[in-house]
Image 1: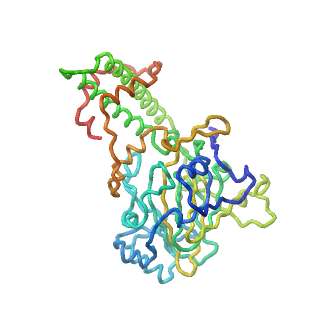
Image 2: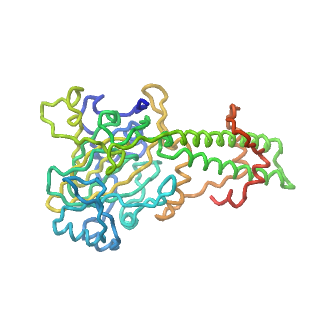
Image 3: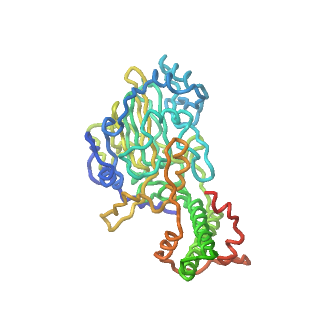
Length: 451
């Protein structure tokens, strides 16, 4: 199957420019959204304008303020990190090795427990503590939803040591606290040239690269979305049924019944979506990765040094030389949208390198025409799925997001204004579909209200 490349965002090579924007002043969240997030355009910002932090976070600070918890370290193999070779060690022991000049280990992403669809936490054992000394939410990212926090620590004296060339699945705000980094980046448009370890299924217009048809453009799993929507409709139907059964019901039964009919149509459609999903999943066959020791979003090639005369905007130039090089210095922040390939070299400046990053779920991009993008700053996603799913995770880091409590008037207004279309139903053999009343009769009310 041919690669579905729908990417519509910024590309240095289309602009024939190798200069990244540097924002050295305050920028509002909406301005940043319109000019960088929405356009999928990388940029450099200055930490002093984004993170108002009085703490000097270094190894001494980490030893004094972060508990000596176990961590899993990346071990250097063949002059590179990322091959999956791991070493378990206590955090303070690792920091002491770094102080002594050890260059064999690198602290990067730590394991976070996941359910079938998403992580059950924003933080690992280290970032849960560090986030108390850094902003938990960045004003500049507006209404985007957090995916995860991470910390990166290592020491390097080898100018040739670098990570694998790879892409990520989330928008990255990369805050360099100590040292220096050089990112070599490519836009998602280069995915078919960079020899991926996995087999790409689709590149969404926002740059998200997926390896199956079961992930939508914000990174959510379709089945999770369908199930959560069904739960919401059942809750609404339960509230409407209780309203009908009230003795002193001031609302017209007809208005409620019309809304119940629409809710029934939505449930039928969601049932069909779930059935389609399961049928498609049973038929979909993943192709084997080229290598078993690296993830599917890693490339099988790395960059090579280019000469001054090499023209990176010409197709005849080797792909390994066509990168854009971005130098990130201490105090800089790099914004890198999801799907942008990057290979990273770290420099310790006679000490060590230390970075903290925020990963955000990428926004929904709706094109009004070929050149104009809809401004969705207030509602950057196609629905409230991520917002509602993250609410419990925010509580774990001390952020309380108010639940939107539905009352009967809001529910009736929602369904009254909802356009539903009758569609041809998928045949389910001898399986009988339930009427609205029978549906509710078979659902456990406690289950409906648990979320």
